[in-house]
Length: 354
Image (cartoon, rainbow, N blue to C red; front, top):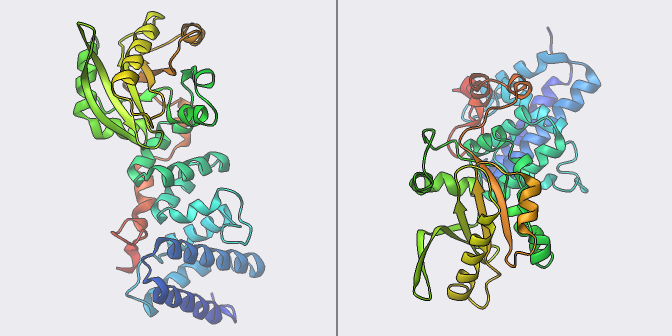
């Protein structure tokens, strides 16, 4: 198949773009790399739509770019196709008036963007993961876990009395800081475990626990000792949220939620407010984590409670719905698709060009 008359022009233009970007950023600044990939995707999409070259142009382009710029990685046939797909997913990304939320896409490494394009087809949901990945600083592996656990359905879903006990907009911010359910699939507890075993296991896997809680939580202590009058009490888990500027008391429960749990947690929050809270801190928040709850019962239990409390469930493992399992690509196919995008500091490594 012969090359179109202006194929040489296309090759020269893309070479020039690559070399210009290399000079400006040595292909290391992520935003420049994402912009470059988007621009190449734009060119490929426009020319294919206008001139109808079909799929044959991309393999030739990948081969010729490798021959003329052999030191560069990230321009394999597969990656060039992904660039075109990236442009089609975000056609206005680098336009003067990009849609709200889309500029955050340029802050993510290429491997993150490939994963999102491959696994999250709903644009609204994908944009939510983009925003969270940027805000939380998720690695690609953490992002993959969050997608698999359907984090977008869990965020802000806890039963709370925040709207009644906290001023706006803090009540909304605190609500969005909590999830329901929490997924503790990194634990290996046997049936019939005790609450102290759960607490110990969470602390043993503190890094993973903090990732599931979300960014901003700082661990203060477990079985945190407080004294009231002549009595001693021990808080299961105590955290401080660096962004919300408040303490978080977590009470762990095995089994379903019971209304009396709310009174005990309210007591703990009062004690923390009186003994630990600084004058500039926001009110202490309480969170009951249990294995299950009746939502109506939980809402009634929080009525009349003075302190801002939340009630959420936790799962030790999560089975994906069958419909979702069939829709998700296999681990093997995902790893194959992402093989081009994982080579050290450059987000897209190219096996074909090595």
